[in-house]
Length: 563
Ligand SMILES: CC(=O)SCCNC(=O)CCNC(=O)[C@H](O)C(C)(C)COP(=O)(O)OP(=O)(O)OC[C@H]1O[C@@H](n2cnc3c(N)ncnc32)[C@H](O)[C@@H]1OP(=O)(O)O
Ligand SMILES: CC(C)C(=O)C(=O)O
Ligand SMILES: [Mg+2]
View 1 (spheres, protein in one colour):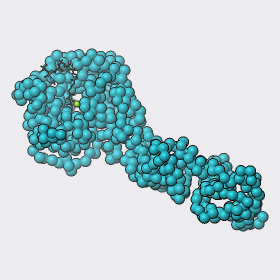
View 2 (cartoon, helix red, strand yellow; view 1 turned 180 degrees about the horizontal axis):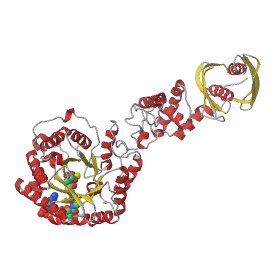
View 3 (cartoon, helix red, strand yellow; view 1 turned 30 degrees about the vertical axis):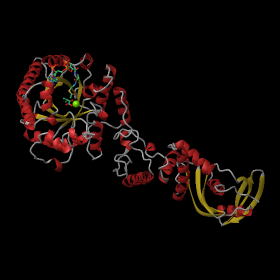
View 4 (spheres, helix red, strand yellow; view 1 turned 120 degrees about the horizontal axis):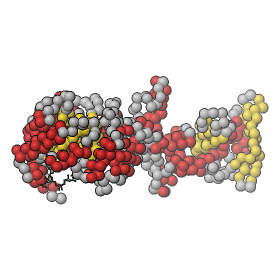
């Protein structure tokens, strides 16, 4: 591969003088978020959104709490123009929301843009022109001064059109497209010229949006470029410094975050990172990254699957299973040690919440392998742990616990996990909660072998129990009696008389759910004919569950013979 054709970023970008405070800063509040899905995202779709899909996306933005929304490039297509008119004529823009319309720096396109917003109380007109050397020379055919002239002339057009639209409070946005490949002194000069022309002031700030149109360097370089602008822009308190990262190197999110450290106040991006080539920066990830640091993201992401469904419907592109925060698999652990840690972490979290006397959803979050509580974004815990051949004891135990209320003793978890591993290795597939339950039943509850007919336990004197019952295998039936200090020891004596030697090593039981009619489950670890294994019994009566558990252990090995 001819890698030497490519130049490193430091040869392509004139780096600004190094004045950097951004490495020492922290992001302590959310920036102004601006979704550009209806423009930048839409222009990258094989099948651009029709009016119905555009409307659905717009309504989603409102429900999530966006206050500034880029709604299209109305001079470029009739669909975009009509969509802006639809918003105006149906009065669909709430009082606290401002729409942004996008235009190139061309007189005819600017005029058409203003036609589209007539009747809106507020709008941002966003004008762009590429400023980087290759674009100047190859695309626009202009030198630095000529291009500056073209931009300022179009800026005057924009201001004139705004004056001619008295009912609409127009604010201005300028994007030096490919800012990140433009010489710092040149782009600073052009932006300052626009601030002067549009009279940027705190009461009517101008937005300077500095795109990494094509990502070409590590995020620290973008941060340096943004900090340089932040420090040197004229009328800084009359400028909203905005960023617009793309994701060509896969570091769009990092660029946006470092840019915020470097002084950016506003971020343009798309939900789940749709957009040209590898996409615009993903606003969902950015917002939830803040959330995961304890910062209010100022967006409602509590139904992430609903948001994802709408975005997938509108874009006709699916969100990847591993996509941060929203993918199907991102709150799921398959591997044994992760499952074990999550299971312990969730139990610890529940205990902490009850010690603090707060609901689990309010208690501080510190669960291994889960950066946020899946419930906060509308995910449930059931999907957190899934079982395949790489899963250990914890995963299967967690699934039996959440789906069926079973609290398996640790050594039983280990024993059952071997059966799970055999089953999943044979199939090569994942096992779902229903299949796991079927396997558990077959392994412990429905074991063939010795069964019990009629039986009863009496306590002829305190501390002495007598078990009498009919043991059956196939057509054989024998009745035996045994006595012992407890009902189970009496049972083991009766079994010994039937020719089966059983020692009880461990025993535990619990109710399956609260309430008087609930089932009881008993777990018993036995040495049967010299081999140690577990049995499980389930019944409305604790005693019956315990007796069945012993028989389950008996039946766990080679078929027992009774005599
Ligand atoms: C990074 C970004 O996302 S930028 C936004 C890109 N989005 C889009 O292009 C989507 C919609 N665009 C379109 O539908 C069309 O490009 C239109 C309708 C806007 C213009 O179409 P046309 O007039 O046919 O021009 P076309 O797109 O072929 O070429 C662009 C022309 O505008 C010039 N131009 C490009 N960008 C700009 C700009 N920001 N400001 C002024 N002129 C520009 C080019 O130099 C070229 O001029 P030339 O014809 O004299 O060589
Ligand atoms: C803001 C505009 C010009 C843009 O989409 C880009 O540069 O990526
Ligand atoms: Mg873009």
